[in-house]
Image (cartoon, rainbow, N blue to C red; front, top):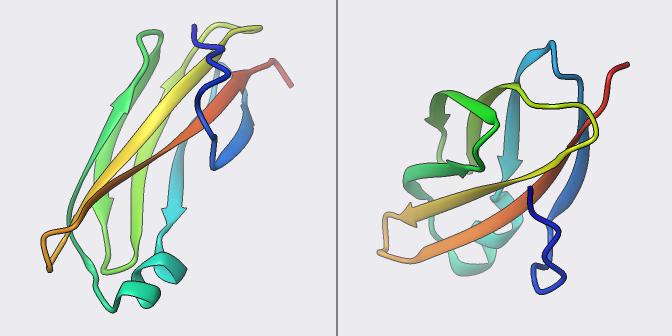
Length: 99
């Protein structure tokens, strides 16, 4: 459970503990600014959430998330490596709530 004030989250999302859904992070604006595209991607998911399939396109990174405990927030960090060799990451926060 992370509540770190030093992280500049790219988004905060609500997730139901019973759902299994993809989460996509759009890197297109950033990549257009540096004239590059995604070569590979990885996701780090805090314990308690379950990471499923990971995929990417030239501009988007996707992970399937499931599980979690209601009332707990989890950090999910996406790290990309571009064709040009740039490595960057962004962290989103997921608050698990029963809907």
